Image (cartoon, rainbow, N blue to C red; front, side, top):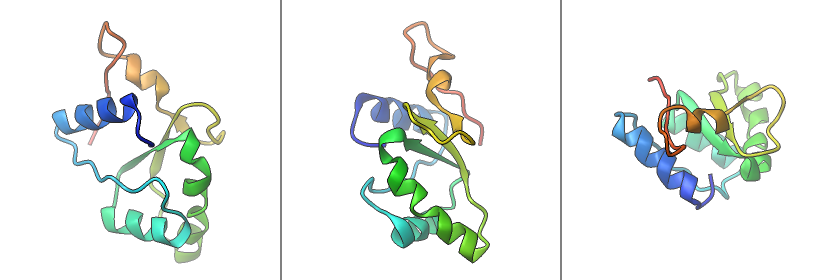
Length: 104
């Protein structure tokens, strides 16, 4: 996710509930992004719709290597149809409209 207010809220919320957050440069693409995801071994990846092309560019490496693709939650408009969107989860727990529901 690029630098925006929601990034800080999501990162701090996940850290608050004890989830380890691995931050990966949003300009990383293809094999380098695949390698970063292999090292981080995430259970869930949160991807901004603005970073969609960068993330989708690494999927062929998952297919070619036989490594299982991580679960992906999309933030923002224009997510691929087969993925879960993260937007509704932001509004579940607080009256101010910010919250986080995560398991892990």
